[in-house]
Amino acid sequence: MAYRKDSWWKSVDWWTVSLYLILVTCGWFSVCGASYDYGEPNFFDLTTRAGKQLMWIGCSLVLGFVLLMLEDRLYDTYAYLIYGILLLLLFGTIFNPHEIKGSRSWIVLGPVSLQPAEFAKFATALALAKFMGEYTFSIDRWKDMVVALAIILVPMILIVCQKETGSALVYLSFFLVLYREGMTGSILFAGVCAVIYFIVGIRFSGDLMGDELTSWGEFSVMALIIAFSALLVSSYCRESRKPVIFILSFGLGLMLLSLLFSLYVIPFNVAYVQRIVCVCLCLYLLYLGLHERIRNYFYIFLFTIGSVGFFFSTEYVFNNVLEAHQQIRIKVLLGMEDDPTGAGYNVNQSKIAIGSGGFLGKGFLNGTQTKLKYVPEQDTDFIFCTVGEEQGFVGSVTVILLFAVFIWRLIHLAERQSTRFGRVYGYSVLSIFFFHLFVNVGMVLGLTPVIGIPLPFFSYGGSSLWGFTILLFVFLRIDAARER
Image (tube, rainbow, N blue to C red; front, side, top):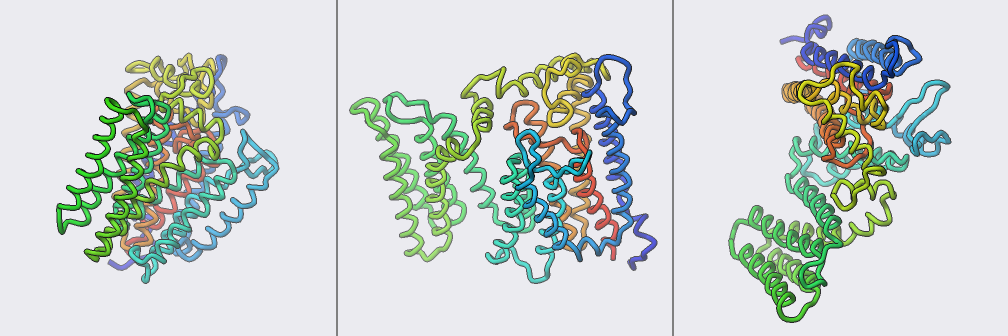
């Protein structure tokens, strides 16, 4: 069907726009509830948080309309330019003298404060879509993969330098986009394994087994490395089952015998035997790769040696790289420490607020925990606790379902794109929204670490609301021109 310039307005996905308006409206009422103090409510006063949020919502609606009015080719043509400008802003804020809550991620212009990290998400999504949308791009070509990773990691590193670790972690969501475009699942598997190694290794590092010499953390992780290596051999080297049987019988069998010997004969640190087993496993994988001439054995060898190196670096990173407040947050989350009045205070008070809401909630403006300011950051990062207290279980589930429908709609829009540029950008958008939703709600419920990222369309703040609005409406404009 021929594309006409006057028909794009009819092609805008108004279902998604409606969901956006519903979520923004619910978010404003949540800000009203979170910022309301006992007295006469005056939500339209621009000196209050509710009034300021309403002003930012109005600006966001105008911004969304302008983005829809622009020619869709502009986003493709100037993708790299926009990306470069945002990189310069990110670099400049590292040396910003204005520090807000320990972060140098803000640009202060008189009474207005902007956070470039919020706008860098859409710029990175545009640049990644532009590069991956090129006709010559192939995700199987390592040079192209390196450039794609650089587009993602450069802003991530700059944001870390601003002491905004939480905002930087959002960029990990782009790996879901790479996976959708054909990246091998083994990379995602390696990422999941790294998380498991870190959690198990840190959580049980101080717990000793019955011999009083072997750490449960190291013993468990080393056993997992051997088991995961055998699983990869079984999945990617199916020519023979003998290597899998040998790895499991030799590796895990020798570890079990060593553990029994240490427990009942002569106590010693079984981890030393595990390290020798891992060295033998690496040599065995190299031998199989050379003998069978199968490249996958070399990749599994890299996975095994990389897993061992990563595990032994976790303790150093945890103790010497992470800040003290980040360490204590992870310890509280993993149950290693109980600090209800310190690092665990926010999450503890958030749980109390949500639990006090019951099934139907206390009603709009009737929450006691939030009105008495027991929950820190209750109108920004922890605003979901206001929903739980005032609207209860029913309201919380309704909000999550609205977000689920919103994300499902974005998947539908991304899949119907006629160009790779549109599809990659669409999946970047939905991945970012999904990451924010999952981590923020999990953070409030005590299921994920407190890393300080906003709930889209709900958390108080102009930068985050505008950033999410730009992210979404650029995609809606690209989608409206898909028939061309």
